[in-house]
Image (cartoon, rainbow, N blue to C red; front, top):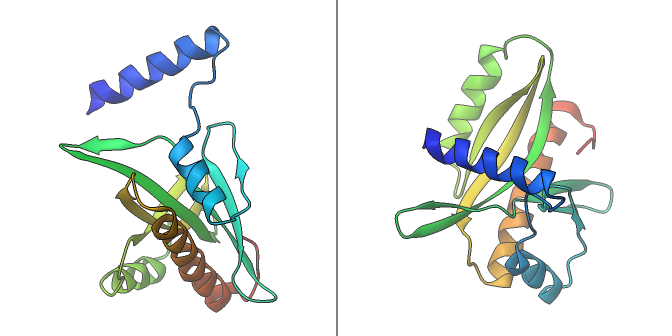
Length: 161
């Protein structure tokens, strides 16, 4: 696993030096989104950003990662969205306990926290087979949007993500 990360990093640097984008867009995602009439943007990483209108007044941005990973015969893709940003410092035990409790009743995916410097973010992530049908991919993207927006609205009342 560690070797795999090192190899990917070396490859990305070599491609960058050669002037080739390190991460290409996965055309399966593009085709699926276009087949379902979903508007999207593409990040420098090649991943896709989709903003869904969850209600008439609320929206949620979801990321579909182009790069996939494999486990044995499975090719997997990650879909995620940020629901909350937490105050600097270690996350409060209360929010961690709440997220773990919610994970036990999640149909698909799970809550996670990610650190960026001093900042912590609560996000929801699903890891699914990379070759999903267009409708299935869009359904999962919308599911992630709904779940994140619900937590964001419950905890902050804001529409930041």
